Length: 128
Image (cartoon, rainbow, N blue to C red; front, top):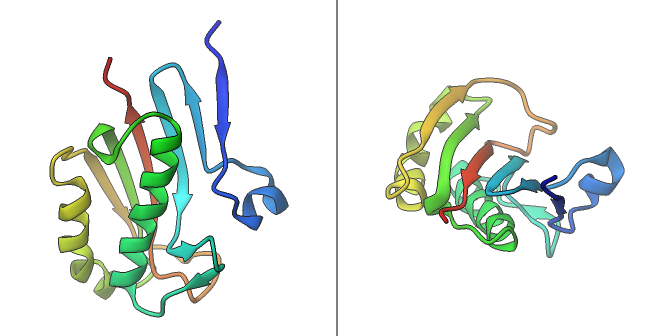
């Protein structure tokens, strides 16, 4: 049976709510919806582009703990409350996922707080 490994970012939300930043089973990695909080300071930038960048850094850190990189991402889900905030994020998305070019979905929906401008969830598969 393949071992199930849980990865934490150290965010207080993971403990308070009861979830993991990522779950690894074999070569598959599921990264939870991730926002632009800087977990070291528990602060979030006010603009969506800075949040998008921090979100990808948070995701990359989780993937690194799982032995993978953003180039291993096969599926991505973007959640943006304000559709006007999506296009400014495109260059950031391309910088982080331009090599992987995963399957992608965008949803417009409210997030946990009004300060959050984008949430990103990814699925990755380590290459053997």
